[in-house]
Image (cartoon, rainbow, N blue to C red; front, side, top):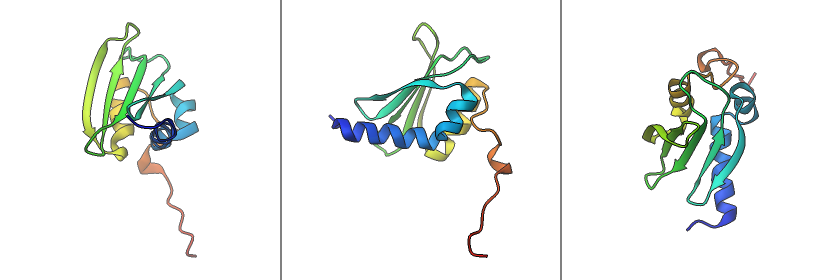
Length: 114
C-alpha cells in the first residue's frame, strides 16, 4: 500500500495534469479526493453523457486508468493505459465538457530566450 503523503502527491500531480484550478473552474469539478491506491476521484458538473464522478488511477505501467461513473455509481466508461497528455481528450470525449478555456492548439508558447 502507498503511504498517505505519496497518495496525496500522486493525486496532486494528476490534478495538475488535468489543468489544476482552470480545469476545476471550466468543468465544475469539485470534491477532489485522493485514492489509497494512487489516484484521484472528483465530481463534475452536469454534462450530456451523464457522468457524475471521474476516477483516475496510476497503474503499474506508470500510465493512467480512467473510469467515468454516473449518479448511481455505475461505471459508464473505462479507459486504460493512457498517457498524461491524453487526459484532456479522454475527459472531453467521455463528458462532452471542455477541459480548458482554450483548446491546446490555441495556446501560445512563450519563448524566454529573446
